[in-house]
Image 1 (tube, helix red, strand yellow):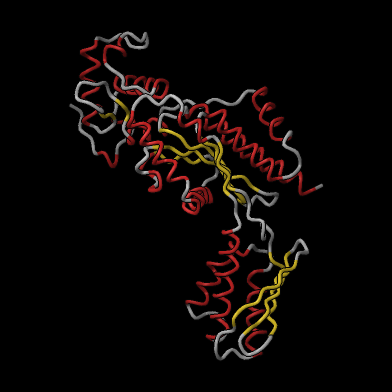
Image 2 (cartoon, rainbow, N blue to C red):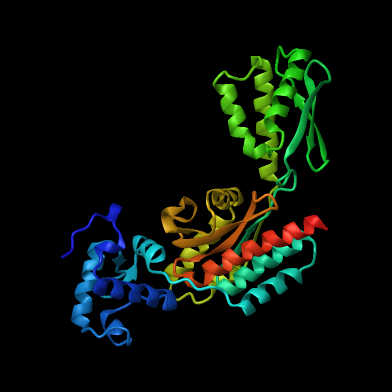
Length: 362
């Protein structure tokens, strides 16, 4: 029997025959959703091996943690570790054909120029093509990806101050804030100059952590009351941006199709409950900030869906300055057709970003 360490497992730990059998098992599971038996695999045409040989290899794969058996006498299913290994090392991803790309573009452009209709269409389109639920996290409509040009604080009375935020696109926001105790008018001006210098040409959400770190380290040349005002303002302004983001979910009914057992139904019901937790789902999609392209979460890799045995395939879309302003993707059972869905999600994200950029130039 092969030796291995699950935490440091890689394809190099599998010989060519074991790798081929493992690949066939996962592909059969993704196609049918059913446990795969040794006899079924030996008759599938892809293996010229006896059922006994395949059973021995399956036993090795179970010992490695790559397969598991839902019942003692049933066939085998890929584990979460097995699916991750398959996706990272064995999955063959094709490109969308020109006709498929044209079809996706036509569907999105047919939704019209208004972004909200395009987002609705993108979510429904992904659900229909992928056999799961389609997700779209829209850009926040407060500052979107707009950089700040200038910040100024104006003294109102003993308890309040007005903050004026001027964005580079010409938009101006006025907000009332509670003044920290002991804040002098001169400190208000210094706080405005401090923020203007650090925010100029940057988005609020991008500059927030660096500004707060400067204050925390004591390097900011402003007094404690002004620092408190700045920190309060950054928290309020960026949290309001997040709350105004919209999450569009379409295609829940798709997840109810092809359910063969009560356990499947219970899993889907748990998934529906998870999807009602809007803010946590937004947080999940926001993880694409760290991704250059498609990102895949399998089962417990994301705590939000740890009980529903689900996979999420997501990709970010960008504005004209290449800032990530939103994300879209698909959620469904772990037997999603990854080879098909990954390029589809990737291309749809690129397409949505391009259409948004075009709409902003008109």
